[in-house]
Length: 506
Image 1: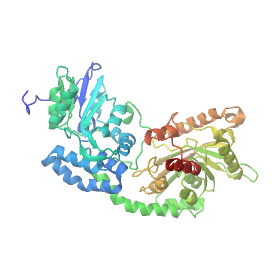
Image 2: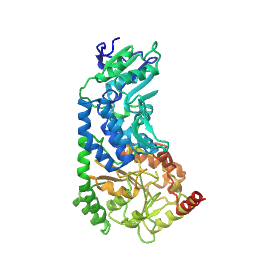
Image 3: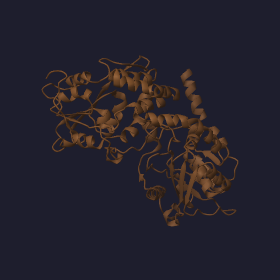
Image 4: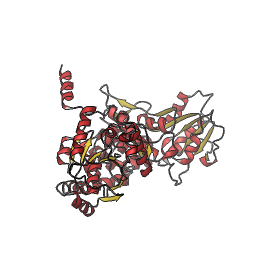
């Protein structure tokens, strides 16, 4: 075949997905497997989450010039510039964590339904992309079932930092994609099908036995539940995929949102809970309360244990506002500053069973108490496994279902500064909380009625999941932190930190 002359390619709608289980497919990513033709949002997420606000802003400012370069100078040059701004100087470990914990959620919301119909039918699946391989691989292998991702390779220093440059042969576009396929496959046994969306993919597609184009037509992305795995855990502060317009609006909102969050946090601290609810309304915090909570405990009576699912660090505070009275809470990790400014009494658990049980009993003797037995937050409509300790300590248990809506920023983090979590919640234009108080557990469903603590915990998880329309899982805090941060999720106490520092000095 003469270079530059290719056979015509039919649209992907004409491609049959029948009888493909023993065949091999090679597909491009942006505009082919993904609806969006631009990788800008994913480069900006790298720049922001592995870098800084300033780096991401620099990428946003450079965006119009890089799009101009893409159209009129060179696709390869434009992508190389994106890579340099987003990656230069960053630690590869940070890049890999962001690619594993942040990007998959946004990729999963952008999968092309027609391409997925075809791609999913093949037994062997390859993705050939101009994007850095490290960006795409975690998502492609876990959620798309790709056997291999062939992408642009980053140049890395001996100290483990990205230089912002790429390894030879360079950015994988045009002829470089073709050469990558020739290197990967025997010329006598090329891929059965090639998929692309633009002229620079023709070299790749012409090597395959069949080739189909994904046309530039508007379509709704594939529902996330149609992928091979559900998105349960993800990291990152941004709620929406940061297209250039969304990113610009987010930066313009930042100073307004920051001032608004300070007002929302600090004006509510001195207010009684009954009055704080009206202040919520004035400051644009939407609180929806359903169900009838029990009255405050009488003198000499132990308090009620409110067992909640965990959405944000503010769950206990908002529950107190919904109740209209002071309560206490226990938490698995809280910064000293957050503990000091908390409008309700907050006690950190040590993860020492006997000590934690004694603290919970003492707090229940003082009054009502809120606990989130998942031990960590979950953003998606799933509930993590409930720790059963609380069920052993009281039979006065009221399940509380909590749901939230955050439109710009996520108010939870694993890798970031937890100190900022409440501020990010309140930086949203109209943060929404829906608190549903369920009926108190009857005695026969408690440990006092003959149930085991695990049975009680599992029952409450099922009841809350059913109320919220969520799905219960067996995942734990440890699972979440292992996936998103590569740690076990434990917050070392002061003595442990001192011992670690001593070992390092030794």
